[in-house]
Image (cartoon, rainbow, N blue to C red):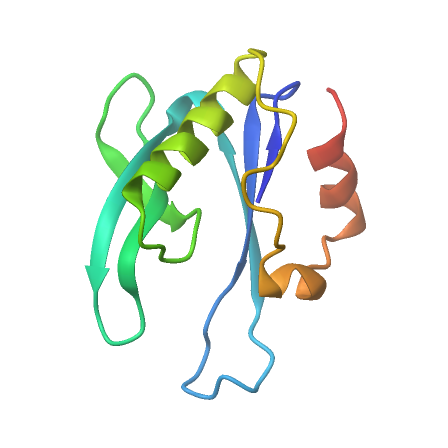
Length: 129
């Protein structure tokens, strides 16, 4: 995921599971949303693989709270307060408000090494219009 406050857009990089086999390469889908259409939702997952709280982005129809689609912003964690802090950080950042200089979580997610943005999307997601 990338936040571009100059464009007021959020860029979501997702691997789409195409089969039951976790060792095959899954196709990648990149979705782009206007920040003012995204709301934060915290859910509790009690499934076999996801257990705990998770932060989702809910994309709403313009001017409403009617959800068109959702995407995961975090993996499951045990502390909903940490997810509230994370959502507040995203909101403050996108509104050009001061945000903490020190990272609360210093570990990078495991999947970071497997993210390869297409060149055109990499440029757009990092620059101003």
